Image 1 (tube, rainbow, N blue to C red):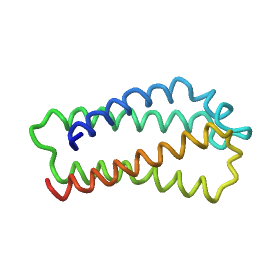
Image 2 (image 1 turned 45 degrees about the vertical axis):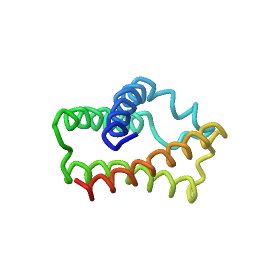
Image 3 (image 1 turned 30 degrees about the vertical axis):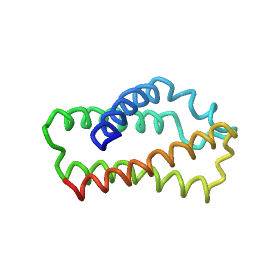
Image 4 (image 1 turned 60 degrees about the vertical axis):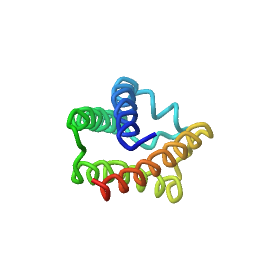
Length: 125
């Protein structure tokens, strides 16, 4: 899979999960943890950011070439959640349900892969 196809796939992930987070925001906390660590508007904000980022990705894909600045922005947008999630999972008492913790670690691995691919994309742009 080349960088552009991965970027397109990630845009669909964000365009699907963003609205899902927004619609399910009142229920996500209790589903994920025995003691919710984010209020519903926290999940709403995350969903909105994901959706807006997905729109930006689709807009960026319409160009012939993805510029270096776009790869840098995409790298930052993938790296920030990785850092926040890793630090949260390691240092905060989140009282997560086992399936939630597994899903969060899978998302960390996925986004770390994106950071790597997007960083390489920026160097070759």
